[in-house]
Length: 516
Image 1: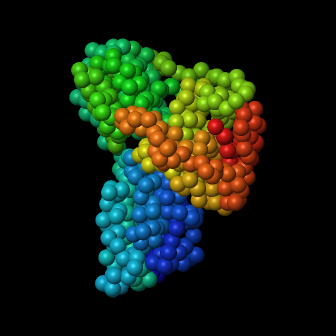
Image 2: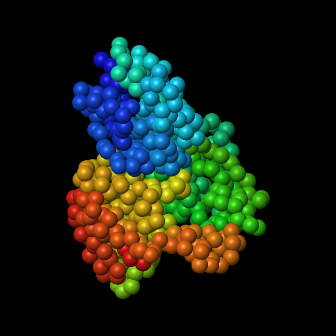
Image 3: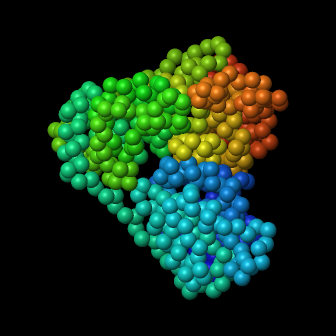
């Protein structure tokens, strides 16, 4: 058995049985080992950003890490943007990065680079394996790190000769650690803050507090104390829909966010951070809460958030209080006429299927979607947490592979989609059940707002050219079909309804170009 085989057997034996790949020469022994080891599903991406983004989406739904296989420093570099998103989302990923043979490094061949230096900013743990004999143990350590709550990016660099060298055995990763529980003091302090604040208190949720029983407990606490509930602006996974506690998100726009939070005097954090602006703006605050707002942390994102909320509910005698803000079943009426953001939102709300996974990178077009979809059948909503665009298409690949029995609905801006267009090819190759809506406004629309927000003035011709993606217009139907994905175009709300129903009825990928 060589090192590569010991590596693959260690991954599979430890439950890492999906590998998103874009390999090169230095990873060929790993590729060959896949034919000798059963149990690993390998998914090819034609660009490394698809590979890393898919691993992010897989973890968000499966709750366990996948591995990636990337080629040297440049291959890893191509995947860094979506590793940034995954790290901010606290997704667990095991990156396997090939490197030149140890004796070849000294010759400074063209693809030689500082892989550890490239990996470190987007990884929680980085290690270069020193020999074939230790490779399995190194892999087990990487897996242990990746699945330590709430999830970590573990990057293992494997020189080629350590893959082809003889290896004595495989290894098994440690069982996932239980999440740390909060102290009784933290619970008492949070209860005091909520009692003191009453309706001027806000319970801000993030992480797994937006799922399952934790979300229900937050609703019970809000009903008992009168506090407001909110989610962070961007969340890795939020369980939404009829019968679930419905949460507004902290708004993106600074002026709207500060107005929303202006009366909050007690802020209690559960898996969330103090809300801050995405960027600095002249004469606007970075921290969005009022200066006199008291902040109490009940639990950090890596702690046991469900237990923390259960303990807080017990402290407040709210354990049996019916939860507040439970969304009633509601399907909006189907609108007609020209394409509008509200009309798109209504069609989504009317047709999102039960148990769907919605992957959202709609950016500006999607800001009105939340209220129209809150009463749809129960579903999951995955958002871009790190802000690095090109997230939704790859994330949808990973989510669909993690849950093949669930429909994935992808909401994507045309500018963002061009960053990782290659994900469509992977969807077609793997016959993934994904319906994609590409909102074709022919521009980086969010940047028009940012230009005004930072006080840069009205855009002139050169500035407009940097913010538009026309001349020529992108043909999304043609782009999709070229990669094996069926597609249609909608220019009115009537056409969008027809196309969305067609996509939902399909068992494979279907793309809708929504012309705005």
